[in-house]
Amino acid sequence: MILTSKKMAIFPLLAVLLSGCSAPKQTVRAPHDDVYLLGAGDEVNITVSGEQDISMRFKVDTSGSITYPYIGKVMLKGKSPEQVSKEIADRLRGNYLQSPMVTLTVAEFRKVYLLGEVKKPDGYAWEPGMTAEKAISRAGGFTDRADRDDISIRQAETGEILKNVTPESAVQAGDTVIVGMSFF
Image 1 (cartoon, helix red, strand yellow):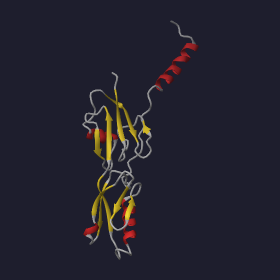
Image 2 (tube, rainbow, N blue to C red):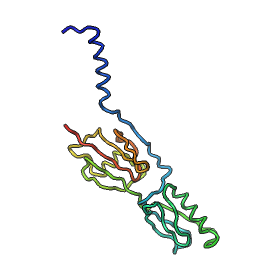
Image 3 (cartoon, one colour):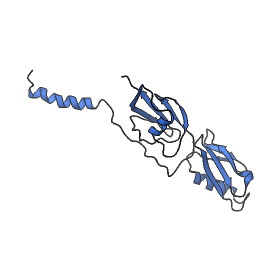
Image 4 (spheres, rainbow, N blue to C red):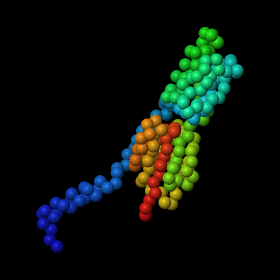
């Protein structure tokens, strides 16, 4: 078969078209360990210096709030531990305490969920610096049928699904990591 210049021009075009068949890998959301925003499912310890009666542990409810003694409902969702500490101190100051020193720490982070072709699909406690790779390892690693190039993350914040992420992609508390199945 003799290739004419018209036929030869098709080969580069065909190569370009075929190269677009698989989506490129992307690293999404670099871990931002410096500021953690609280959300439903987190368990927090609130300590008021010198006040054991109002130092306690809470689980943030589905609305993103807790009910704290003397001051009532406190919204935690979307706030940093430092912001909530300051808010509680401000609300306790005056009527209840002169100069309250309030500290909020996260006792247990909300979970990250793993679905698809991992050995133990389930919810696992999130930890700072978690990546897709670390989350998958928590679930026992890939199954034999896993497509290691088909990893997606459903973001808890937006519900958006990020497809074809790299193993180094950041996973935030509440996210769902989904590993696809290989057909070969």
